[in-house]
Amino acid sequence: MRNRIVRGVAGTFIIISLILAIYVNINWLWFTAFVGVNLLQSSITRWCLMEDILKKFGISS
Image (cartoon, rainbow, N blue to C red):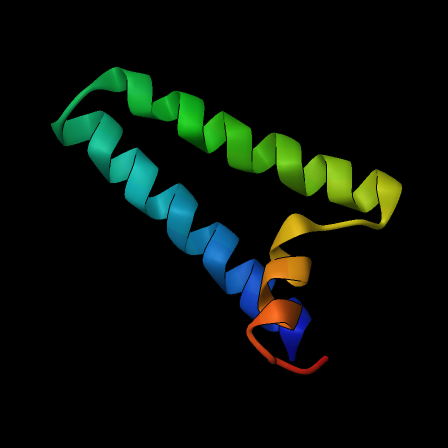
């Protein structure tokens, strides 16, 4: 379940930052890149900060 939440949060962040880049400021694309880099990093290291945050909130795997 936690994996689905992580993917949902990442997807939501990407969509929101793209909308903000279109309507507010192009620099919001840096946030999109940040999310992408974190997804790539977690696939390589098998460690994800969002999973640790969800664990602290008591959301089970």
